[in-house]
Image (tube, rainbow, N blue to C red; front, side):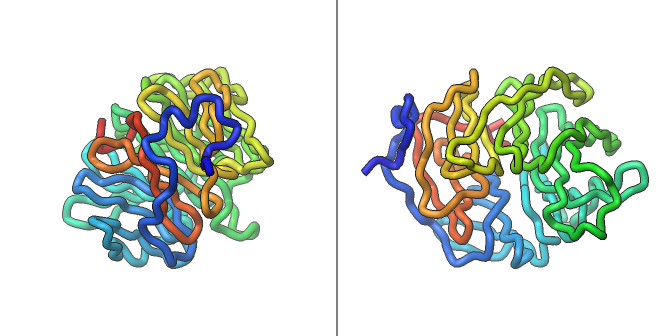
Length: 285
């Protein structure tokens, strides 16, 4: 039985026809990123841990993690984390020290940074919905999309989202995709050198009332959205198909040395699927 639905070219990209479960028994998996050391790092939000998956073995990489969600690597291969509990974006230094990168905007605490990506010049982009806090804890009256410059300056890019969530750049870095979970669509923006966004459009509507979460792109510019299944869109926004998953996915990342394996955070498990194409990932840049 095919794992691809609404197939309009998606099955042609697959090198395998079934998901493989590589780890399970977690609280809620999120934020995967492949490390050049040959391992997958990912978050377990309720357990406040970052796990390391290497050679089929799982170990705790960091505990507590501040209820980390989205993870990525900067251009020096340092781990960046969006921490719900600490309401910050953090960075791990070479000696293991974890420092704050962003905690406030105009003197007010961030909501609960959710997902993150980094441009080749080092500029960081992240989303800040309120999923990790109670209403009475809010200091910002909006759910924003932010950027962090090389000097650490935090700038607000957009406030007209309901729940901004997954965020990823196109392969040429000219377009920023941002998921708006409650509106069930992904928006696309032109990105300026200073990170400013313009010409925002709805790029993709989710099938089956899917609520878009984490996202990735491949080398050819296709967008992979964790929603109800993994929904895959061509660079022009056309739906190529939906990958059925054993559990509803929350996020995904390209991994293995060649970047051809899609690792998916499927609630309590980590699953993977081999493709015949290559994804975009920090360790490949």
